[in-house]
Image 1 (spheres, helix red, strand yellow):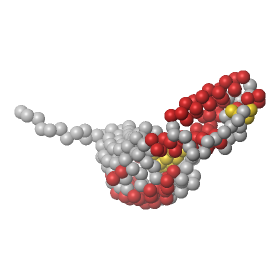
Image 2 (cartoon, helix red, strand yellow):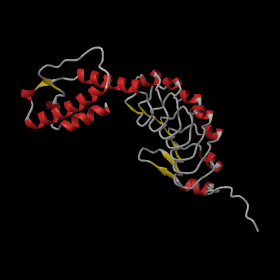
Image 3 (cartoon, rainbow, N blue to C red):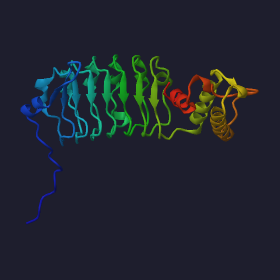
Image 4 (tube, rainbow, N blue to C red):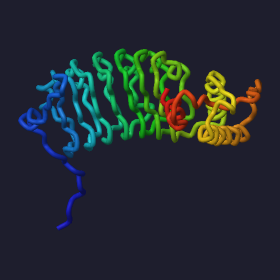
Length: 262
């Protein structure tokens, strides 16, 4: 007898009892509903009875859709949906006004199915959209004035809107491994030159042998990068000076890493 076509994995059924037992209390008293790594394929409706939780973790499951009923979680401050199979997000996500953390990394989201209503999350501090299929970012995300960290890595982006790059509180923007054109790479080079120009510079005689050697290596790297890029209209000149000021920290590597995180 021929077997019928498979319907795909049904996933684990989450009961209200299971969900209640999965609630954890954090050190600050927040109630976190942790349903990560549970093999869930369908959003469990039973958890709507626990909509007063502060944090919801549905990461590392097999969810393809989040229902509009997510709007019932009005107390949510932290929502983790990373590493699922989400192809779209509900517009009602924009009603979660208390949300400050949203992770939807490693899904199957396209720019077309990224809801415009994300710009309503006025209190959002951290947004991770990495490892999806986004070929553009809506300029409306520039309305997220409280955003401090934004992950856009491993997508199909060729540009980032100025409204997003100029967010007033943005400290970390990870857009690595996107097919940006050469023009953007040039702009990144010019930005790095501007950062160096604003540093406090020192003369060779003020550096110890170890710091001097490290500085020279960093300068050589910069020169190699500079030779690969078109020269900016304004040439910078630092006669008798080396970058950067190694006296600011004992270890030059510390200085370099610190600059990368600013």
